[in-house]
Length: 223
Ligand SMILES: Nc1ncnc2c1ncn2[C@@H]1O[C@H](COP(=O)(O)OP(=O)(O)OP(=O)(O)O)[C@@H](O)[C@H]1O
Image (cartoon, rainbow, N blue to C red; front, side, top):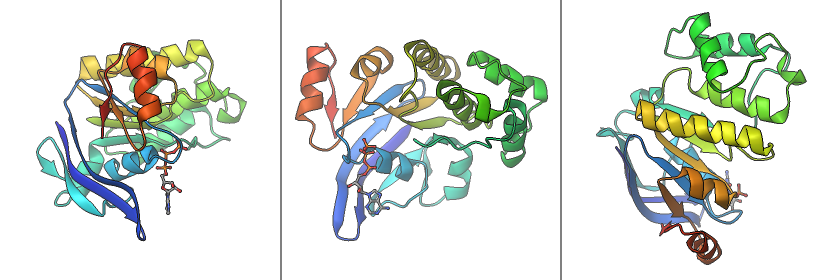
């Protein structure tokens, strides 16, 4: 269980969000929505331990972020909005490179299977020759190498075609359900959010998103 209590983040005197409380259980897919600048990426960065909260507490499976930061990091997968891959390396070389940096030992076969499960079959091709959708899939596959309990994805499906979007969505959904992972992801695609998410949290000024989601039959929760 991820528990976020009275979490605030400020840059200087400006609060990006203030006193936010929510939780997520293993197996849940959580959508985080809000307008540009609402603080979605900042929230994911705090949850990913990339930046510190100003106030509040976070625990993952009972373990405190404040007390066990190093250990918590091993349990988190994070995919930023920007693709973070070696463009001149092949898919295989990227997977092997990031496996060496990770805390897990995975065989080449297991790494290849991870890519195949995502319908990413360009194993021996250089990343720079892949489409944007394929790169996004590889970025997600890299984040899963160490088998994280909590997967944080910042707009994982932005700018990619419907087929790849659906493949990524289905894959992530199955990851949450079959492997009891908590997935929190941001998107501006409300159809996708409605289809995939068990729960939707709205951050910042949320009246627009609330209305769109409610009209689509979803019940978003304001943070
Ligand atoms: N390192 C930083 N220093 C100061 N302000 C920052 C920093 N990072 C983000 N911000 C500010 O925090 C606010 C929230 O930004 P954030 O990127 O979290 O929004 P977002 O909801 O993810 O937006 P988008 O939908 O455009 O990705 C913005 O006003 C941004 O300018």
